[in-house]
Every structure is written in C-alpha cells, then in structure tokens.
Image 1 (cartoon, rainbow, N blue to C red):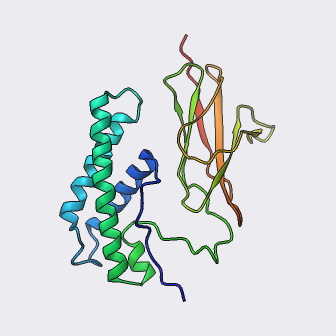
Image 2 (cartoon, one colour; image 1 turned 90 degrees about the vertical axis):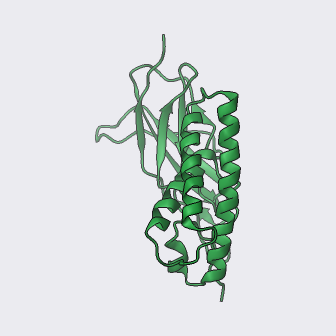
Image 3 (cartoon, one colour; image 1 turned 180 degrees about the horizontal axis):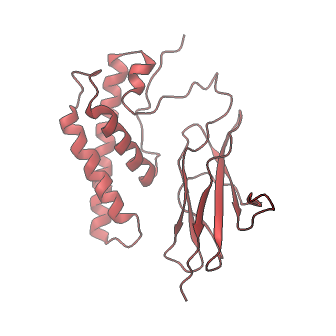
Length: 213
C-alpha cells in the first residue's frame, strides 16, 4: 500500500501558480484545526504567503523595476522554504489523505495508477506589453509533461469556437499568440498530456484584443 504524501518541492511552479497556491493554502490553513502544532505555525506562514502574493502581483505586468523583481524573488525563496517545512510536517503528522489535502497543498501523484493527467482548472488570456500579441496563461499540472493548446477567433453556426491547433508547450507561462487583430475576440483552451494519456480540455477563456496603434 502506498502511503499518501504531499508534494514538498514547489520550485518548479511558475510565479503565478505559486501565488495561487500561496493564496489557497493560506485560506485552507487559516481556520484549519487538523494541525494544532503546525511547524512553522500559521502565524509565521501566512505573512510569507501574503508577502509573496503582493510582490508577485507587482511584478506580473512586466513593468517592475529590478529592485521589485529582486524583492519578489527573495519572497519566493522564503515562501518555498516555509512550504517545504509545512508539507514535511504534515506528511510526518498524518497519513490520512483527506486530512493532508485539507491544508490546500497538492498530493504526490501515484505514478503506477495514474492513467492520465488532470486538466488545468483555469486558463486566461491577457494583453501583452508587445503590440499585436496576447498572452496565453493556464494552471500548471504537476503530472503533465506537455500541454496541447488551441485558439479560435471565429464561431460556427451554433456559436462554438472553430479551434485551431497551436504548437504544444512544456510550460504554463511565457506562451503567446500573434499577430492578433484589434477588436477581435479570441478564445483559448488547453489540455495536459503525459505518457499515460491526455486530459479533458480546460475551461475556455476569451479576450477581445486591443492593439495599440
């Protein structure tokens, strides 16, 4: 029997995914009485999570100063150290999966039984700082090694997007689509893939492009 465990290494996460995890775990642990002797304590963990969330938000638009990026990176390093300590404590404290997951942290996938990766629970289209370009963003899936993406800018007679395949990617950040036309609404979705299969398609994101003259 495989003992359930939480992931302890969150270094591979993108900045946006780490911020989402920080928010989720802070919310989950705030009123959680499953871990009376959490180490580090929630009073120590929450400020690190909130500090990183705030600094990541400042740098996410690509216009942050070098000092702001440095402060974000320092906050990221401190948060990941705290996350490793918290998840190590929980792994040692209990082997009950439901109790572990009440913390908001992610479980280690069972590689022997996993048939395919799950799909991203959120996707997002965002304006880019570069002209005629939109950013393609989505939740990273730990057990996936590749993401298949589709985009559309036309609808069929039933109002469904006419999907066009994009080149696959191995990362959830740094992806973009260009060129886009001003005033045109673009639709985007993604699915995860690993050696055991492919997930369902994610929810669909939409954005009306704004191209600077």
